[in-house]
Image (tube, rainbow, N blue to C red; front, top):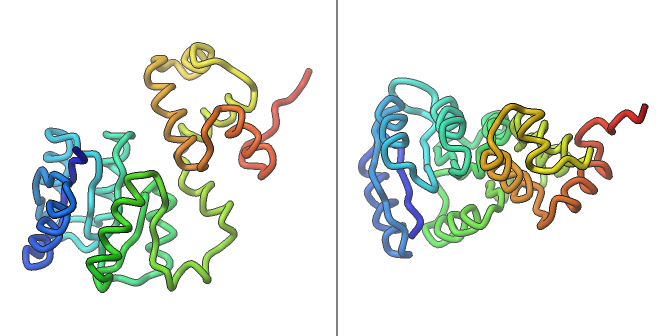
Length: 209
């Protein structure tokens, strides 16, 4: 069962969201009303998905979501906000968020967006899609610095063990990052990821000596 943490200080909004998610078989592990409790609950509950309001009382929801993604790289974070702001959307994507939904979204569309995000899709307001930058640039912005390093090593043809040695991390951590890269690029194999990266110039080409 998918486990979700809701981060929103408006209970009149958070409660209907909780009921909607539970109605489609998703387990809501808690509702945090500020950034500090959100970080603590995320560390304890390790949710699969976090819905975070940008306008929290103690700090920006964007920074909260970014911190949760650093702590739980396998989690998906979606901004759920009243702010229909293109700059906020770009910043959320840059931080690695998997979506940006405005609170005027219909419940049916909200549920569809959540299910799409769980499958690894980037979910954003429909009205923003025609005003975005190059979609490849948007995909590139989703990659964290570590994921870019992983992608560069994939292009170089390194194995999981080779990447682990190169980056001084465990093989399991490498595999987690690789899977995240595949999901964000929308490909299924390491070769497809490397080909995509080279074709769209996402990483520098290896220098042959």
